[in-house]
Image (tube, rainbow over all chains, first blue to last red; front, side, top):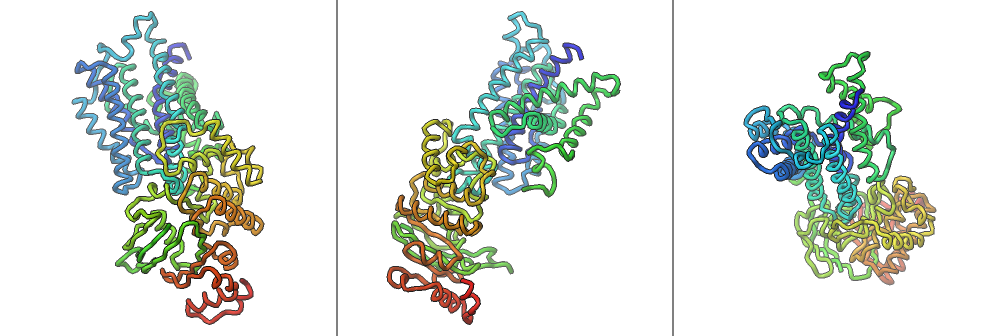
Length: 300
Length: 264
């Protein structure tokens, strides 16, 4: 693996670190298996790219993308909490609806951003080439978001959110409005994923309708990898583990694709990811907290 | 302190599964009273507690707590007035959170939770001091996961959690039923001490006739969603476990079974 593919893997790992944080919040903290991310990731990309092409400031465009992601999370939360649709199905409904929404937003399946200003543009004057600049900016953004989430989870409100996911009945008895807290968490989770999508579009110079496919599995892979490597209990370390998990996972993928002996092509990426996640869930020695949520009949 | 008027709760109304859990229950409990509640399965004991906490919606009736009509209040809002300890030690705490995190959750019961740090040094000191009173040597394990504690330890911590914030009412739902006899005695002593120290209005559901008579100042017997016996003072003091069993059997329209007397 050369430097270019190493930095490329770190960069994409950081961007998907935001997805991992979102998945951690919905799956682990709220105990809410949420597939909306497959729609909210391209939603973030679509909103940011379309606005930038229309001449909107890239930072404003990114902020709007984040809000749009939050709304997508709210839709899933309302379908589940207000109308009682099973959480998994509620999130699939939002996800499938977002496919059409994203096409409508972009007006076509693909929007190019190569010649447009992005959130990276203001930093290009510092003499760093895109090769180093992208991972650096990615790192700063992701570190900021992770720090905010880690702080959030140890506040009174965040603690209430963790109780809501872990024991909703107890949470209500302690005066926590569990439905509102769940909705807030879902909005927050999908807002982070949309931020990931917006950054992805700007770093890669395009938004495409298909980039959302398998986002959830990649996010899960990152969370599982992080939790398997850092066997941790505390939330702050768990947040860091999500990010490192995402980067390590991307590096592992890059290594696998670069190893000629394996004969893998870039097109095999989703298959490799699916196999890795499956192995993490079924291997007898592999113990991770997501196992109970993702396997049938094993709920405690 | 608590006034319930003509409470009626019907589950699955209009279906073949229709259950009338409460059928016009009225009772008034004064401030600082410690009331024990007995009754057979399905008598409506737990439903009564669930109505007070707001977990079960009323079919009809009214609940007034400390002069305020709370009938329409949802469960989270009532948490400011009502603290509860569940029968199942797993139900009242979060096993994946640490002991101090559980305590912090309870210390904010019924207040608005903001973006301020949940565990401050001052909070930790307060928790350590309250937990050390249990004498269970848990004060040095505040950072341990709740799931590592035994059922009895968890119930003891649950009781402390229930009294961390000022509360109008304490509800105990067979909170010693899942414990071994030694731990039962410990948790009951702790209950007595805490209720006395904080002068709490308390409702304790129990299946043990002995507990029902030895604790508190008043006993209620429920049957088919109504109060069928309400004893206090001298009348209660004269009652023995045998008398209570006899009344219990009579209410249920059964012949007194001498076995149940022996076993009580």
